[in-house]
Amino acid sequence: MPDRADRKAAFLSRAGWAGAGCRFLAGDASARSYDRLTRAGKTAVLMDAPPDTGEDVGPFVAIARHLTGIGLSAPGILAQDRDHGFLLLEDLGDDLFARLTIRDPSCEPALYAAAVDVLICLQAHRPAPGLPDAGAADWAGAAAVALDWYRHAITGDRVDTALFRQTVQTALEAHANGPRVMILRDYHAENLLWLPQRAGVARVGLLDFQLAQLGQPGYDLVSLCQDARRDVSSSVQAAMIRRFVAAKGLEEAGFAASYATLGAQRALRILGMFARLCLATGKPGYVALIPRVWAQLQQNLLHPALADLSVLCADLLPEPTASRLERIRSQCAKAAP
Figure: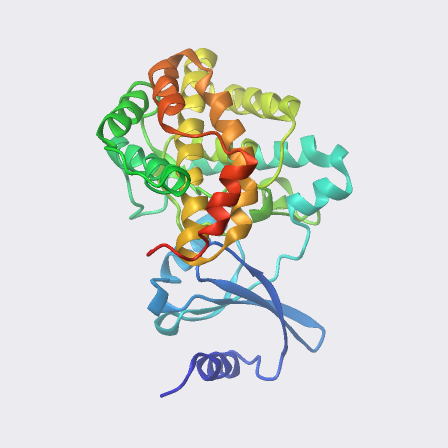
């Protein structure tokens, strides 16, 4: 039976890229990986998403086509083998927002303004068909992984999550449960590319959007401005919120409550996810990101709308001190997934 390497070679041969130079480009929290191919002065990107790990390239293809159809810059699909989890993609280059802002911090406001304009464009169009639409209870359940994985990794005990879930759900129902828009979910500086040769919203290249679903308008803005992997200046975050609110015609006070609620839910989910990635899948690098996410959670919990949740979090979630983070690392790959 052909192994993965054989299937990859066969796919590239069918796509006309047999014998191309191949260099690892990126991996992420999933089982997907990306290679850059080079042949005759041209480049392309190979996505390898093994189906036996639960990956499916179908949603990526569908969402990419939707995004390009409304004038946004998702990678073009050059060839695909959905059964075996391979895609050959247009190469959008290396100018990730995360890299550009390190080289030149002064470009951050302009880049982030362009990214906000993409969200405004995305939400002005009908969502792609067939997107999942989770309710407040589902989002609250996702937040409870902070107890199941992050808290448990530090304390070793288990707690009943019912009150915690209900408190998150109540906050979401009150402040972040209105009409849905299409959200990309992982909308941050490592998934955005600058394409200055293009015009308007097409100047922002989009990556890692296959988990797109229906959600609240502020969710991707939170993902952009409360980035788990880099610090976004408070002045830029405030400016982007103002830009978004003005363009959408939103009421500022109500949006502030929604933004904080979505930010708290997202931070809680990521705390649990990062702990799980260390304990269950042997990826300790995510532990170093936990303090930033913790700080974002604390900032969101300062909003008066989240007073009840703030009290619960203070009672149930230990602060990620150096010794506690080391305790999480010491359990790397020792927990059953």
